[in-house]
Image 1 (cartoon, rainbow, N blue to C red):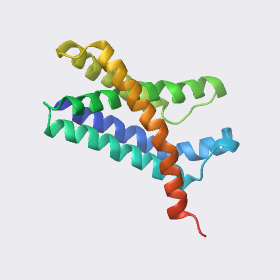
Image 2 (tube, rainbow, N blue to C red):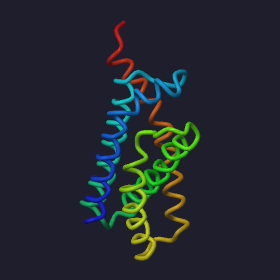
Image 3 (cartoon, rainbow, N blue to C red):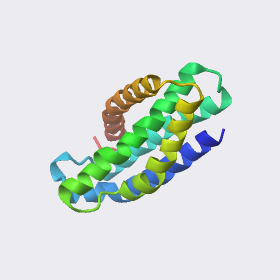
Length: 157
């Protein structure tokens, strides 16, 4: 399954860029909305693990339609993530937002090919869109949970 390997490569490189530079960028650019660095990195790691699980399970069980929807939805969610927030924040603040480079040069082109292949093989565009929206909603709900969990683990009492 070449698609899952490409997905995991893009996710890893993108999330490394985010983990290295996004916390400081957010602290300078958006100080009121910035979690602590280790909390942010923990959340990024959590999202990476979920992405690896979705890709890995789909690679092992390619005939499972639920796993395919999860993988395709995660691929679409990462595509959207490359545009919003990264590209949108770069335009809004007129300064580079970490994640734009890997988003524009890895995620957008390579995930477009994955989504195109999924639509070209057997999934309907509507199924891809619904899967993407569901995964986006789940990820938006999970991120604050990862931040809270990180606070519980890393913050002194």
